[in-house]
Amino acid sequence: MKSESLVRPFACLVPLALLTACASPPPAVVPVTPPLASAPAAVASEAAVATPVDVASAPVSAPVASAPVVVEPPPVQAARPGGLNQAEAKALLNKVLPAKIPGRAEWNADILDAFTALKIPYTPEYFCAAAAVIEQESSWQGDPTVPGLPTIVWNKIGEKAADKHIPLIAVKTALLKTSPTGESYKARIDKLRTEREMNAIFEDLSADAARLGLPMNMNNPIRTGGPMQVSVEFAESHVRVWPYPYPRTRSIRDTVFTQRGGTYFGIAILLQYPAPYDDMRYRFADFNAGRYASRNAAFQAALSKLSGRSVDLDGDLLSYQNGRPAAKSSDVEEALASISGQLGMNRDAIRRDLTSEKLVGFGQTGLYKKVFALADARNGKPMPRVAMPQIRLISPKITRKLTTEWFANRVDGRYQTCLARAK
Image (cartoon, rainbow, N blue to C red):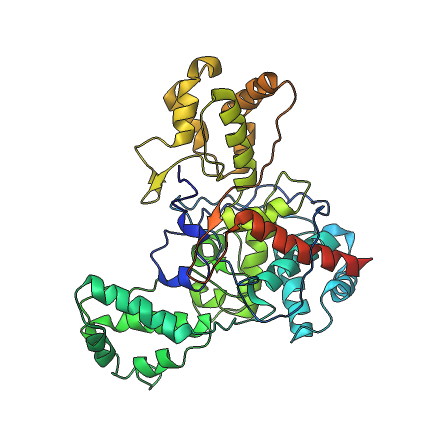
């Protein structure tokens, strides 16, 4: 497992995460049962509305990990989720959204359409959860602007060039060639403002690499985007099991960078799965660290208690390489192997159950039940079934220690402010 000092790749902040060699996005796990309603969380904090993006509210990229994408077909639910019709839901959403956000009517329509298409219940808690993440990740910008983006992009291109012993000036000269928009690539990079523009440039660069004559990989490195910083791979996987509800003239990748598409897929990854939590903070933590990370972190804590071994509470139970479980055992597997006699399970049986760590069904495996039964007995009382993943967020933009817990609490403050408007 990855220690906090090493920092796993999904802790990167946007836009640096878009340009660095972060691993592939998280497994896209779409539920087979309706999402569980979450009670309002207990922690509240001040939350500014539509504030400029800064370190405190900088967008945090959707979690990335090297685990494979696993997709379960979602269910078909009632046409009126939550018992409200669309007019009632629209009125409720209008009540809870901040009063002064730009394009308020469009946000109302995009959020409501996403809830309707995804069959997610119309409740104040769920509406406010979506609104809180949008506010945290983009400050209600459909196509978030990123200060200093040209410098960031040139620095990263320079790093790529340096790895190939190519002077940056040579790369800039090559990028003076005309791009498909009629402007040179260099001119487009020099005036970059948003992630959507950056994605378009890298898509064109990737397709045009041979003509440009650059002996370096110019494949699109951008993995997350849009107003909720959703994973492109999640979106591409989701449409294979749940039809995208809007007419589409562009790729799913490009759709993620639109306000409507990014909102739709962000709400899907946040709410369209049966999270076993009563506190919404753990959904927010999962949004940052990967689905079921909070459940899995509690499993890691119980395992540590039972085995006496130090286990990273990061929510990842297996190590992955190239999208498959690595041959080398994770710290979780080693700790489980040390108590295999108590569990009555060999290594093969342990790994078999661990492979469902990103699915709702892991909580029903023999391994999960045995570990908690033994840990509860050792502890003298039930161990918590949910815990905050302990992951540190690292980026050149961050000058203080920020973590997944910080992210969850920050979003929860916005969530609590939103809920107050519903009263």
